[in-house]
Amino acid sequence: MTVTSHDPRTAAPVSVADETGTAELAAVLRAAEEAASVLATTGPAERRRWLHAAAIALEEHRDELAALADAETALDLPRLTGEVGRAADQLRFYGDVAAEGSYLDVTVDEATETTPRLVRVNRPLGPVAVFGASNFPFAFSVLGNDTGAAIAAGCPVVAKAHEAHVGLSVRQVEIARQAMTSAGAPDGVLQLVVGRDAGAALVRAPQVTAVAFTGSQAGGMALWRLANEREVVIPVYAEMGTVNPVVVTRAGAADAAAVAEVASGFVGSFTLGHGQFCTKPGLLLAPAGAGAADAVAAALRDADPAPVMLSRAIATSVGTGITAMLDAGAELVERVPAPDAANGAPAAVLRAPVSSLKPGSRLLEECFGPVVLVCEYAADDELADTLRTLQGSLAAGLVTGGADDPQARELVRVLSGKAGRVVVDGWPTGVAFTWAQQHGGPWPATTVPAATSVGAHGLARFLRPVAFQSVTDHWLPTEAREDNPWSLPRRVNGRLPEAPQGQR
Ligand SMILES: NC(=O)c1ccc[n+]([C@@H]2O[C@H](COP(=O)([O-])OP(=O)(O)OC[C@H]3O[C@@H](n4cnc5c(N)ncnc54)[C@H](O)[C@@H]3O)[C@@H](O)[C@H]2O)c1
Image (cartoon, rainbow, N blue to C red; front, side, top):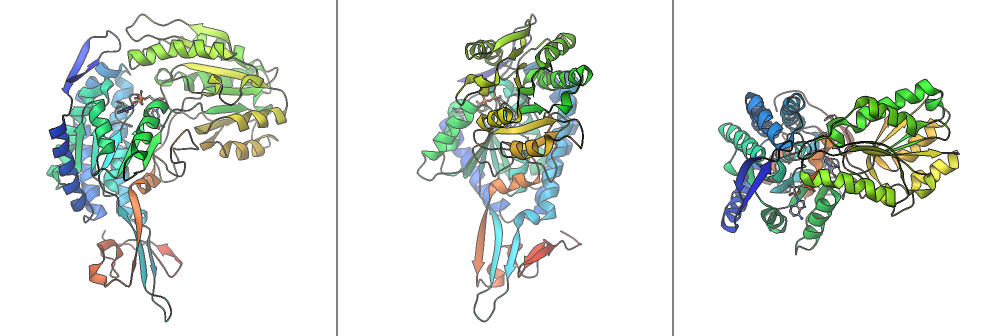
């Protein structure tokens, strides 16, 4: 059995890869298990070196990889060339986060006359299965945030190739694995499996200790169920697609010029990557009488998008999504027809009364692609009630009239209860990989709302704290030793950690 990727513009086959069979998967899992014990004893600075080596190798193959990605995704060379650089920088970032050391959360209680000595440190879980999404073939794929964070945390990765960019998945893993093993990493540090069955078998495999998934609600929930049916249940960190609402306050829509500016920003954000962003703003809530839906329709006509989607299935789901939203009570304000391409899809603006945003309505679910819903609210109470009915989301936006906006403070509070990230006077597309980032959100945006799949705190998903009580110092893992050979920040007797300078 093989998996074939196709050019979204022409439907011509691009890459073919053999599906991973049972015997091959067993060998992959053995290598991952062996690598796990090696990684668990390596210092974070060592793993940083491997990740930096992988980043350099990615950059050295930038043009080759971007061209292959363009053939498999049609996301265009400039965007894809930039995304290779982003993926390389992400790998460096996670390596740097590991080397800084606070992710280990070393906490020491010195012994007293009545209490024993305790050292609490985070330990890596073991092999992690990574499922990337189709829409970021570098940044959220086999070498994306999940892989970078897992290896940084000391966990080997077995990635599942995405069928829509299977050739690119194979090539990226080849390049990064070669670079990391040349830098001293064990063979099993990063491996790939191909095929849905192999992916499902990975989630069931006893050697796998956690799953990181980026993709659709249906895919994430299927793997979450599978993991919860195991004899030994493991965490599934599924980051899924959501609606990502944006609220415009009355002051933010003060006059026609302000509304036109909001409309143009909104269109720019929801047509980025042909609307194939998990952070695409899918719902605009604007004050009654502002004419927001018509302004968005005009801005969409001006933008004149020609969406070519990542797969035939996604292109089809745009059309069926629009129909389902119309059936759920929306009306069409603007529809830009699909371009003449194999995976061409329409773009659309819909309008609905806020009263139709009821729990369970199709209007409250993601329509992956350049399709949005605009609703008008009359009073603050109505807006607050509507926001309460929304599903959890990865991000939420607020467009204000400035620092004195009387609605803003309360709306920031309400939105923070619904989303992992609240964006004020900006758009949610674009997720920086930094120390303070939170890319997650309440169920069903993610299966673990306390976790983030982007940013420094992403390492925590692949760690488990252990307290060592009265353990002789040279029996402890290096990170817990009293002489602190890796110069890790430590909290001692409740005092906040101090970051020692020096070699790590
Ligand atoms: N939360 C985020 O960070 C984020 C980022 C990018 C995309 N997304 C979301 O991802 C979606 C689009 O991505 P996609 O189409 O690639 O997602 P998808 O769910 O179709 O596929 C993701 C991966 O999971 C695998 N998979 C899915 N179900 C499986 C099953 N039952 N058994 C084995 N393997 C399975 C697929 O083969 C693929 O490799 C959109 O909804 C988008 O909003 C989310």
